[in-house]
Image (cartoon, rainbow, N blue to C red):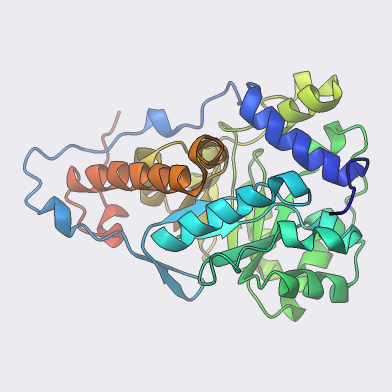
Length: 337
């Protein structure tokens, strides 16, 4: 077993997980989901057991419109987290992502902490690298990185707020969009551009679509704040001022005028939130911390139970809005103020 206890990147992975599990690092501003409501139907006129939650995304059919978002990898102690999540995602046929693979590029012996297809060979797996890292690593390294874990898609995360708050963060973001465009044109799997909790505005969504990304995770404010995490990790004083910086999830979702699929994340905490996100135009909705906490409590079974809880909540919203499937849910009537 490699000794990576003094490696800054690996240590950061452990610190991030520990902070999310033990500290309050949520935005204190709302996502916007509580400000919108469906019109209730006292006569659903359907059989609850026949509600269809299947969705097509990036050429594959999934049983539920859920995405367990990128969380971790890159340290021996978090390997089990990824495997437990993968097992649950395969059983429920939903999408999962791993954390930033930068650690395995720098230390190949950590590759196994991102590998999950030995325990979940059919899971739809999204690799992960930072947009900034695309400007620094060769295409060959990126290609090998996704191949080594048999990724079905690659998430490119955009985290300028986190990086600029982080004492050791990267501050020169020139050329990131061009690097994304180059990677989209050469990599043999779809690329998903994603924020990590500060939102993607409409202008940037359009730029990413034009660059060739296959989907966008708008990841707005309302959930976990990475500025807050950096405050807890390194006492990053500027983080207090920017704890709630960003575009709220619902605002980002409403304003993203693109033709490619959207993923709603950032404060999505239950199946009703998922239903509202789909009504507002999302194809999938995702979260990380609720599933990390479920895994920490009861391993893969805990993750599976959390997925099933969200599934039931989503179906209740569909039942009460006469939405027999997700296509109907996209047209469900809303209450007007």
